[in-house]
Length: 407
Length: 233
Image (tube, rainbow over all chains, first blue to last red; front, side, top):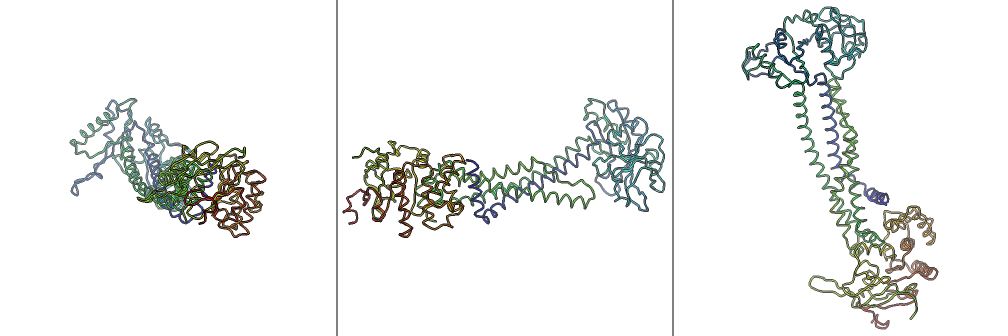
């Protein structure tokens, strides 16, 4: 019986194609906007989350401020972090490991091509395994670095593509970095993180010498002991840092960040953006819904005589109600379906253009089955809700009056 | 007095419409009986109340006063859904303007009353095909009403009226929109149905020639049943 009603409703919709199409526009714009922007938002969220995967909840990162500080010119010169801080921070009992890392930018030459990129340092001794574990780095080809590796490097997975040097880098190749030749001993597995996948890793002592870094380090990473209150550890670190750098509370020229906090900040920003999108899309959906109501009222008016005939041949009020409700629900759902297709195409297209422009896969569209199915169900519900009053009007028509209605 | 069962009985039926402050009496105390297997014609000029009477018998409307018994059940006391059920199962309508659903094919139009009574799909299909054969339009089953002539449309409407094997066929000016020869053919169908299958038919018409196909004619004037000689004066 339901299938018969469905067929009757589809029949009615296809009979007035132009009006159905025009009515669907409101819904399809709303749904397309929701699908495209939420898809992109989710993609961005998961991409950002993957960038933070290397930072587990028990990690605190310390960086020198200055760039983020405000003030008159000359007053915000960044004071780099010094390696001496490591020893002081290691005195904090809750800190299991304190590891300094250097990230330097420089140039590399291979296959007669020069590329600008980043070099990351790997610490020696016990801390090497900690960093490897933290970053999740593994060798796809060759091996990872070990203590005593001089002028040897491990390159990120992106070096296997030919867009950096015009041809893929292989284990055993020699690459010139800052005028010195290095041997590639390993290529890392893909991490899905555009910074890590494009980095050159070398031992800390080699990097310091190569980039003349002296005692300066780019960041210090503190790994907490098990079951430690991270907020308290953060406060202890800040205390030590203030003392060592001789700054007062509120005047810090460094930042101490819990990985989890950074992620939360980003998530809440993304949520705000998505909320804004939801609001815009709901306005479009409300307008679309009103369009459906309007179309359905017209449809009821046009089919007044048919309603009378159907009642005369045995249709109950409920049957007429279901017929019209189904028709408006389908109108919404058809609009939703087009919206999903357009939305997916828009999201994928925008992600493609974005990734072409940025050269990374940071911008991607993540359209889940739940999002697509949810949008479809939602558009059907909008259609039904919009069709309730016209359907009630149709159902309550008096058969004699309806039959007398002249088209 | 025959011993046939009375299937429709109107007892002092009044129908009053309010038009602003004025009350218009469309029916003024009609009483009549229809026996099973009878072919009754209700005749009268336009405005005599014959269509109103037909709507009452057909459970499309309820009387303002009086009782209408369909198989001993008073329709004035029925709820809207009970009326709908009676319309679907016990009554088959044939209208002057055919009133087929334009978006549906001939077969789908015939199937529709069975859809509302929840008949199984296979049974609906079989019965629709049998009815199409009966009205000699089985070669037109996939056609939409707009692709059929007036006479063909009315034959489809007759088939639709018979879909749920009703107790009574109510025909409201069935030949009103047809030329005389096509009208005659439609009347032949109805007469054949009555004679061969014993179907009870109540027909409203203003045309005496059409009314003569019936076993009995009742005359209506100003909402009352009158003798023939008074009907057209």
